[in-house]
Length: 640
Image 1 (cartoon, rainbow, N blue to C red):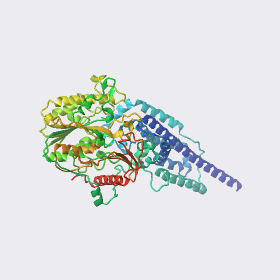
Image 2: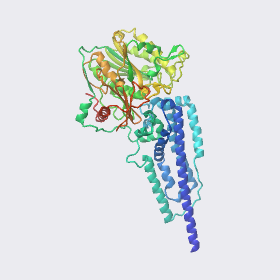
Image 3: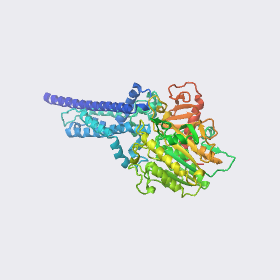
Image 4: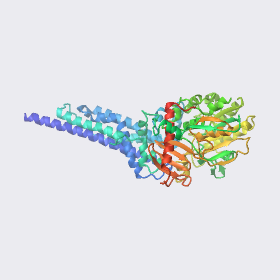
């Protein structure tokens, strides 16, 4: 009897010891992961440090909370399989499979963080679920992957080496197998299992607070709003946007009657004269942020033609993009709808909403309408949006025919494609409205071999392609001047977004500088339309601004400002945070409260928050704007 008790006690101790070792192994692996995430964060920051201001230890400490959330959620299966009661866990084959599973899951999570080390400079935000689905980029992804692997081979090689080290360093403990499991053993192991299930819930939601942590909460750990990307990690932002990709919910800050009185996205344009049925050509220039104009390297200007053209029309010097991506720019410019959600409007569930915009207004006036984009059809879903927003025809890489001018990746070089657009303009019945979106100054920034060493290389990878695109634009206007429709045409030039090229401490490295773009209204037949205009202007303001200039009279749906409005507003959204420009103020709003306010006219580097400002007035403006935006998108009320 004593011998039996001794054997039973020995067995129980062995099993409890094994279970403790299993817990110890799991905890070591989770700690190992946490350290790996912080290493990724440090590398991410070092590669992109010019994009941030005043980063210190608080961003990295706050990041631990988001790391734990991502780690617990992505490793749910691993945690359960490591803590579930049963002696089978100590089998060598089981442990081998568990290690492989742990490696596979976390190699993917670390991989998306590595991708953002370089991809962040293009989007200025941590990637979301759209990165996995290639939302809006389905037609491009197969062509771009090999190009990016070749261009950023060192990142790919570094990742492979890091994953080799990661595999070798995964904590492992050797267990002694035991097949029997008593009631006492089952009770103890079940208790630990329930504790870890609770830890999954607590860790995944980011703590014991009432609501799970959200992307927007990263602002609490960042000295400046743009530093939230340092706090976050890409695995978290992807997991957070899987189930709610549109990221919109109904807002009820005010009653519907009250919000319509406060802010109504309908502009009543009034003109004494009739509509001048001039042709309208909007040219959206890839990545031509304000940081690229009037820039010189040695004795060569980077954009000599655009610099000159800005003096020939109305140059809006206080203009801003309504997003960070090309896919955000098209709805902003064409339909006056900004992107105030995590995914781009074109990729959102609301992309099939009935919208107004240039096509709705101008087609009623007898205009022929067309959209030109030199990339392959399907790129960023521009051809689909062109149909939805009412364009009569779309001209992309497929319609171009032939391979002359093919850049090997995106589509047709700007020089050839802009000339292709002119040839088609010559066949259009006037008046016509056309939009051209250039592509050559997009990564991987290739230029035709025949122009190698012709343009300034600059001090950034994008600069040579910017200079080439400016050259292509010059040739476009040289040819256009010879056409009979030229003198009867109004041209609008706007970048889709900036190329975020400011050095640390410069205006273009600040949040507001990252949105700063040149916008030009140019009418060759009107010598009086010259000079600079300093009023606050967003891409969504192009719609009412141009219609007013053309002499249109009537109501239009627009989230922009009426031309005569002195009280102006421009909205942006990134990383769960709203950014509003209201007159001379730059305001950061987290959806509930104002986080910070700057007078960007006096403090362009946004170094000093101001504490005295009309808080209630700003709150009312911002909340009414957001409520109208969210509710109208959800209810499909983006049209008169």
